[in-house]
Picture 1 (cartoon, rainbow, N blue to C red):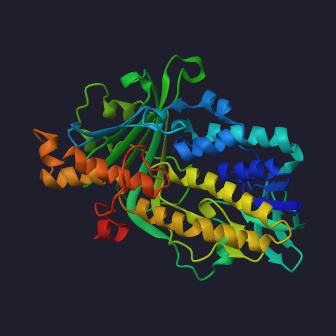
Picture 2: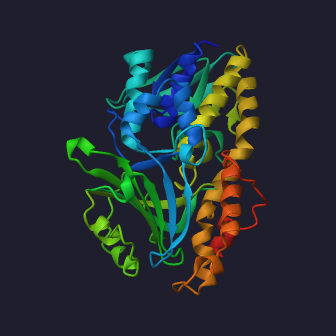
Picture 3: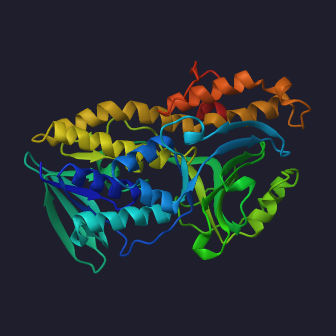
Length: 424
């Protein structure tokens, strides 16, 4: 195996190219946009993701653009603390959990691909519209920005072309169309001084009304002396296009947080001071029953588009890349066998995580507290949600996504509701 095409130069595609290069396999990336730019807002890279970057020799560069996560704290719709846990090495994991701007992380990967593979490894402005294959290789049909069309030949193809994957659509033409979940997400960033020492992620709100996540993604951003704070708000909304870069207006959402009183953070002012706001509808994609078609395979969002919750999308894509490349090394003369083995290792696990993210994940504790208190303030959280019960929920969740908590035993996932149960 000497020549692999990767469709898509997002974080998943770029990281896969680095993994292939690490094992001596040549890769060419085809990306539809004419220029890569550091777009988007924050992502939460879990410990398993940091481990992947460490293995690629990128840990120090990653640390330089990201923020170490120390605490994860949960609040109800009145700003009362429900639960808190340590993160990453502060919990006892070997690797850190870190917060970072998605676009800046993507550019780190891009620069590293250019340095290690050469500038010709990434072909920009080249949209892959489909593929054809035979026993010896795959032909990709490409439309260039200047109108040119061409067919390129490779030994095999890895499709990392995201939530609107053209390869996925061809591979699964009869797959049910994705549909709107009824939930709209606003994602923004705000420059301000650090809160709580600058290393905490906050989970805020009564899920029956709205939910908010807040965490820092850059310290001393561009020399301002201020942190770049990432925040995400979910609430019921109207369906819009599925586009990560769709500009949004937060005005109607701010009043949903009138009752939230957190001593160290005015969340309404945080939203008002936003330097950018993006609107994204949560679209439900059904899990696929296969990621492989001969010499073509899906990876990342193209394989398992999931709600952007809990930092699982990009982290699971990192793990996809490692497992896929390991299997290509194990089956050097048979990419189809390698892809089938990768599918067998990863698909069932990741589909289970994706379904969990369509439900509640560990955010279930905010719903439990809201229901047990009839959506009112509480006097003693131990009387509402005992610490032992909360610990069990979190231990089960972390085990589910492949990061068992050190020193904690996971149990049955009885506290979680699926997407269908939440919707009902």
